[in-house]
Image 1 (tube, rainbow, N blue to C red):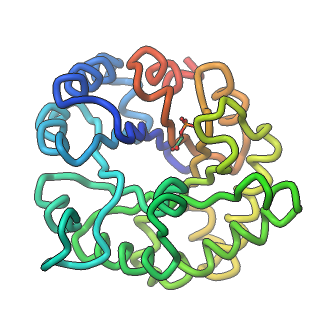
Image 2: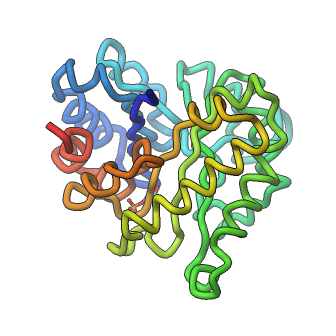
Length: 252
Ligand code: PGA
């Protein structure tokens, strides 16, 4: 049985003070809820350290939103996986569509980032997803499969065990449009099948696949009812503790 994983991607939002307030709102969720779900928040780099400290004893885990492709050196403005891990951060989001689109991240870059994440003990939340024109052209399964093959298939079986995959159709991110639960589940099923073919049945049954793209208190139940969807990567709705809590509590 896969444990659900719900992660709040705060993106470039919140000052440190706002982030601390948001975290304490999420921490108000009861212990019994937090115990049956992996609950993650991904603040901006500037307050990772503070949020890790504030999250201590709450069961909430912390992720960065990115990490550098290189280990160290003359890379102005970059933040290495080692720096991030040294703060007590456990996860890193990699390959988010906004990174792919606005910062030109390719599979080649992402392979390097994955290697840095693993070398420093960060568990990647690896994002995949098709753009609107790819969905309309019917190539979404191929696009997502290629994003998996070009990066995930390079992992070792041991590395693979820590991986979380987030399926986020780009046209659904921040737009209020969601994939129907069947559409989302179909792509998540294709991802799991690709994993099975490469890493075997057991590995495929273990990997956690999140859905992301306008997931909110109104649609979470239907999405989570799908066999292949194990949680959510939440942007907009993670910025209000009440909404994020409702997403986490959807079946209570
Ligand atoms: P959204 O963002 O929930 O605001 O659509 C999801 C994401 O980009 O991770």
